Length: 265
Ligand code: NAP
Ligand code: MN
View 1 (tube, rainbow, N blue to C red):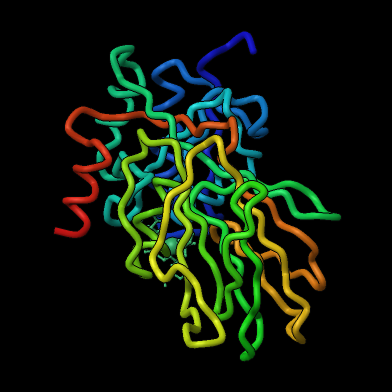
View 2 (cartoon, rainbow, N blue to C red; view 1 turned 120 degrees about the horizontal axis):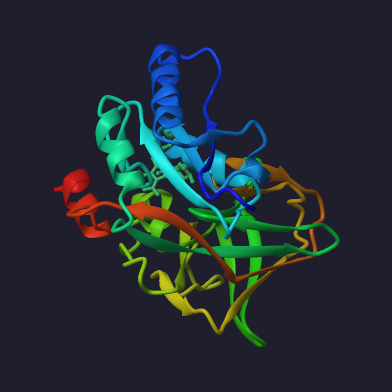
């Protein structure tokens, strides 16, 4: 890639922000950036929308670890959006400034047996697609750990820890820690079924292997961030930290913990 200032804008079509998006694109061109239609020709991928849009931008452009992702918010600033569409000059200034820091967010890799491998930036969740509970055998590396029965399991990245994981009382994890958090969704715990009952973290050297237990519920849904993969009779699912890191721009005084404080306190 010869030109390091190729920028691709990712956004929903026909939003109320069309005018502002056009202004943003013009401003980028005025400042020496080249607009590219194909994301794989871009060095910078700018997502315009909310955190959900950012997750889609990363997914639909293939979790590029050689590109810089930039989140531009059209509402309140979220966790992946450092910029505000209302502050265009601020955005260009930051992009032109060589001093801007780059963050690297850990992602997880999900290998589905007899299917493909997928990446997640927030989390992978395995949930029952029907009213019945789901039974799952969990292994940590080769160790059989527990048999889970309930609504599902969430495996989140550090940046995903503030999303679904947080609603299930999981801990908020600093993205400088490359790890994944395993959390339960409504586990049954009685004299027949027993799970750990608290969430736990696994290091990048470990893998979580989940086997579907054949007990009449063949309808798991595998959620990858904001996309669902419906599978029947999935064998084994292996989840581990991936080598891919998602790079984003870090502005001064806008660390992960600034965001946590701004959003929740
Ligand atoms: P959504 O249902 O519109 O999103 C739910 C909310 O989560 C939105 O406010 C979204 O922000 C926010 N969000 C997304 N990623 C976040 C993060 N890393 N930290 C804190 N908040 C975050 O769907 P979506 O916008 O496509 O987002 C998908 C995510 O929703 C999933 O990855 C999952 O984590 C989360 N989710 C949560 C629950 C729950 O808490 N019960 C259930 C299902 C899914 P924006 O408004 O800026 O998009
Ligand atoms: Mn959303």
